[in-house]
Image (cartoon, rainbow, N blue to C red; front, top):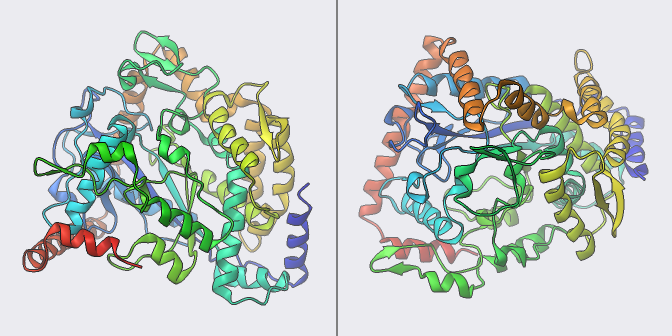
Length: 525
């Protein structure tokens, strides 16, 4: 079934290439809610000591003013990426006074929309655009789901490796064309096999009952304050996320770069009747950027995104068209409450091996029937992934037990993991494969099972569990302050970001109003 992976591996090994994956780059974007000592979402502004959320390179906000987002630069060594993420946490915790960083993906005490403040980015056009976009998300979906946190893993294969793979395949096309096609091959396969991520790493099987705001979502009652799925892995990745009928009808193509950009561009330029009823500017107040199916590209939700580094003010689709795919963004990771940073090095090691497998495996076009099965699998694993009898959809509708399919993939992963281990001390990739095999054989070894087990053993509500681990993480970071040199580096970055925001705002006063700025932005391309 996975013979093409073995053939491509054989071609690479026959060419005598060793260690070409060592320079592949890894980056992380980690979201964390600021909460009060009681566990409610903080209503305080983004701390000035953290700098400008608009211009800081490493510390910003996501949907909410309280939803911090930490961004690491890309590093070749996974330990360096995680080390930088730890340093951000240490700096932030020493600026937070009595507030905590919420350690789980699902927020807890949610008192309606007003309890979740929308992020502010100042008075500049670009800053106001980011804020209005978030107002649009509120009108379209509500705020509660926007307060859910996760980790995004950004990954790019080294140029040397992709060149060797292209040579082994005998592909003579220009490098950017081959590179983009190779990444789309990976993306299609990650859609097929990405259900492994919430199964292995999902850590949100339960949620505070206040989160649902009285909606009937089919969950069971864990106790008087907690809802859960007995076999759930990642409620974050379940249907309590984006409930957008317009998005459900989108047919974004992952066949190739041009098809992807064309179909996504159509979605951000096609009006939607329901959103037209909301309006754009009502009584002088902006409600959303436009009334199209998607306001901008980022509104489209997917497990994985093709990415290119955009220039200042450049639309993401145009950046892709100009540069081709430069890396992929994996968006399927929950915060792991048992890790202070929310993620462990072994998570990333395994993910790298999974991405390599997805690149090496043949990846035919996904038919509508297969896409329906892929979508169903994501929901099934999120809500019922640890059910020993769970069956998933494969190919054109074949039903296969999850554990059987996972075991087949794990067997094929041995070759990619061996290739990744080349020229590295020890065998960290094969070790990770062996460790996660235990979770395939016994779902009790998954983080989601551990969350429910600890709640039962300690007789904790979800909020009590989340507060306990959040306090533990706080103690971990406060006990390890940054060196004076690193502390100053972060302070300088914060000061510089505030100055950059002030400069942008001063320049905008003398140039164009917001409507003209929007018109110019959307007229690109």
